[in-house]
Length: 198
Image (cartoon, rainbow, N blue to C red; front, side, top):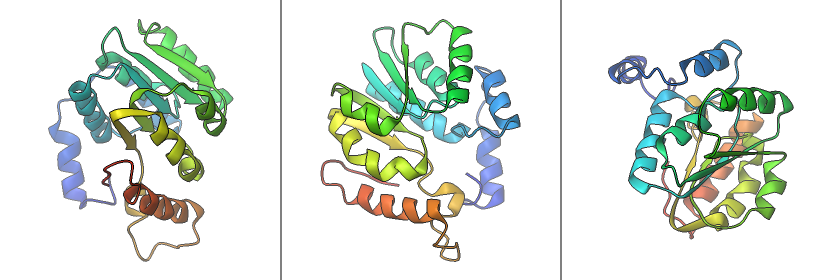
């Protein structure tokens, strides 16, 4: 969140929530090894939405270490299924190792490969989709992911302001990720099939 809020606001929000111990080892490993994972405030928001929606089928694009996958699996019901997609061989090994430590095997299905190709072959009917992958793929993934949603489905996309860089007019517009996210945000907000906000 730092970069969007004033430092004191960011610190306040980071410290006001009760500390969660679930999967702390995985979270700490990711932070120490500079593996990007969803921040705590965003994860709480996702968990809130999942609790409200009670989805049967969830799709996650970008597994990384499996931290967010496990947080999602922890909150969805026993009848629900999370399909998570990852292309990095190193992350796949980490995620499989982490999934094996917890009793959510029946709720999580890991698909290995390029999300842009995999989504073409997925059966429609996801109640909730979380996109947290390579920013360079966001634009190409948007339309196929929206088409996979059920009526009333929810899609959450991470890093749309990218720690304030995207909204900063002084940010170098030639920075590839900033340029892509600015373009994606316009497409996302003007997509007629969904009601969207950032």
